[in-house]
Length: 495
Image 1: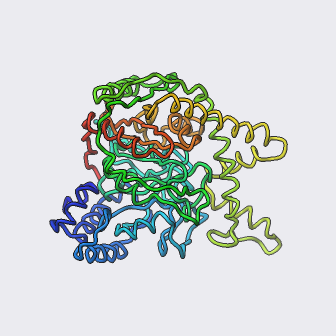
Image 2: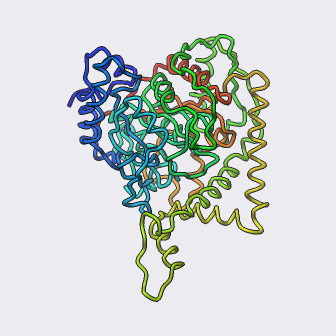
Image 3: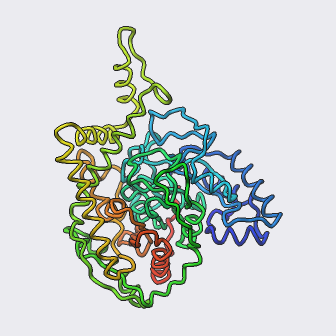
C-alpha cells in the first residue's frame, strides 16, 4: 500500500497536474487504506468500481489539460447525501435498501469537477448524535487512542465517519453536514479541519433532512487550504433549494494570506462555562495570543443569550425533525413492518417506525411532536424561536461593533470513550454541542481548527465564527491559527 492517501488535496492537485502521480494510483491507495481500516467502521458502503471509473475519467481530463481543482481527488461522502446508484440509508434501518435515482446538488458539483467517489461514510442515525453511537451500522471508532490506553474513543458526531476517514488518511477529504456542530465537533475531536458555511451557502437539495432551518453541508479536510478548495466546489446557488442563496462564490483559497493586521477578533466572555477543563481554557488563551502575535486586536465581547442556546436548539431541532421524519412511514420506500391480517394501516405505520428508527431518533421525534402539540406550541417552540432571534441579534451587535471574527473553544473536552457519555442521561451527550449550536441558530459560518493536544495526546480544536457570508475572512483567521499552532499530530496506526 502506497502513502499517497496521506496527501492533502492541495498536494494531490499539484501531483496530478504535474503527472508525478496518476488518478488511478491515488484512488487505489485510498481503497487499500479503507480495506486495511475495517476496525474503524468509518465507511458504510465502499464503491471501488465506481471509484476506478471516476479515476479513469479524471485522468482523461488531466491528460487533456482540463483539470479543475478536484480532478482525480478521492473523497468520502457522508451517508446523508444522495448519490445516484449508491445506497442512501442515513445510517437508519428505516431506509434500508433505498438507492436514490438522483444526485444531491452538492455531490453533483463535486463530480462535475472531477472528484472521485470512494463510497458512503458512517454517521449518527439521521445525523442525530454527538458520538456516532446511534448508527444502524454500529459506532465509528476514532483512529486516535489515549496514550497508554487501548479503550476505543468516539470520533464525534454526527459526521463521525467523515472525521475518522480523513484523520486516518482513508480519503483526502469528505463531506459532512452540520445541524448543531456535527462537522465542527468531530473535526475537533479527530484533529482535522471542519467548516460549517453560512446557512444557504451550500444547497440542501438531495441531502436527507434533519432540521431544515439548521442543516448545512460543509467540507472536512486535513488542512484549512483543503477546506477552502473543497468548499469552493461545494458552494453555489441552486434553484432546486429555496433556501439556497443566490450569491457569488468567492475564491476561498486565494483569501488565505494569514495576515491578521487590522483584524479585530472577539472573545465572548459567556463561553467560559463552569467545569471547563483547564486544558481547553489554556488552548483558548493560547489561540488568542497567536492571533495577537499575527497582528490582530483581541477584544472581549458579550453574547449574553448564549446560555439559552442549547435549550432553544433542543426544542427547535427535534420539532423540525419530527416534521421531516413523518415521511418515513413504511409505504413509499424503506423498511415496512409485517402486520397481522386483522391489523390495518395505522398499525403498519406505527410498527414500521418503531422498528426502523433507533432509540435516539425516537426520543427526538417524540420531543418534537410534544413541543409542537396543541397547548405547548407557544410555551416551547414559539419561545425557542424568539430566543433564536435574540441570539442572532447578539452576534449582529458584535459584528456591527467592528468585530471581524469570533474565537471560542470548539468542544468542552477531548474525545471520550465509546459508551462513557450519555448512557441513561442523554443531556450529558447534548452538552457536547454547547459551543457550536449558537452558530447554527444564527445561521453563521464556523470553522474548527486543530490547535493542540491534551495530556493524553488527544487533539483539541478552536472554533472561528465568521460574519454572515464571510467564509473567506473566517478561513483566513483559521489559516493564521493553523500556521501559528503548527499542529502536525497524527494518530498512531493501531488498526
